[in-house]
Image 1 (cartoon, rainbow over the protein chains, first blue to last red):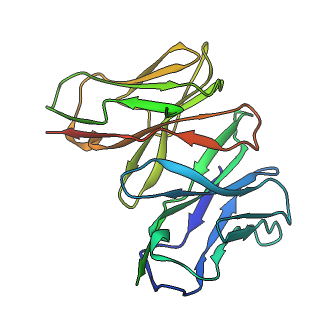
Image 2 (image 1 turned 90 degrees about the horizontal axis):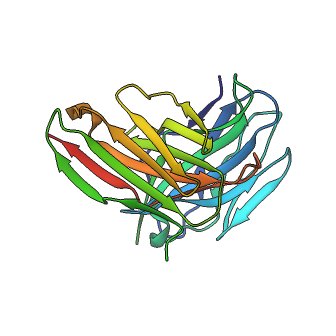
Image 3 (image 1 turned 180 degrees about the horizontal axis):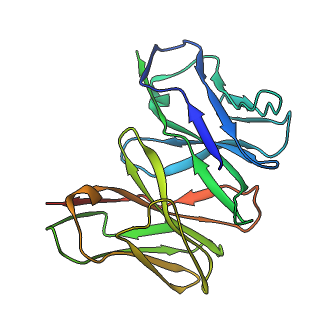
Length: 115
Length: 113
């Protein structure tokens, strides 16, 4: 079946540090890939997405590139801020064994940014 | 106003009680989902519905049931709550295109004593 693996947290950084959160996937066909962010006490919201190989999604200084050859979609940001502290989820939408497109989420990575 | 709303936001109940969590959306999406979130386990899909007449089990449907009363409403029921159903529950919606993202409600924190 489809699956998403992302690095375990928490990831603890100082403000202005470089961020990478690794995400790899297993899926049939050609999945769409997503990063969601969950701020404390809130639901998830889309951060960025990519729908085909070599696409780069970007938003709020975050970037991720759809790498089909390595089945990866790593999240990066050049300079994190305290306000980026949240839980980040990698996800995909791909065809399931029943033929319909079902979302699959990773376990989430907590990011803590210190001033 | 929020596009996806959930009620209640918090609920404490006792083992054996029947609980219903409700979700409403104003996005006009056909697809709705229920997830639970547990620390270290991420989001797990309980049930999903691609339209009013289409209900499907997710990976952890045991102990849960759902009702899609209208395109905009999707309820999750725990017929006889047990402590290991203590979790944060999220409703989400999406458009039918596979490349479209999901939109999440604010969540319901359920505690079963």
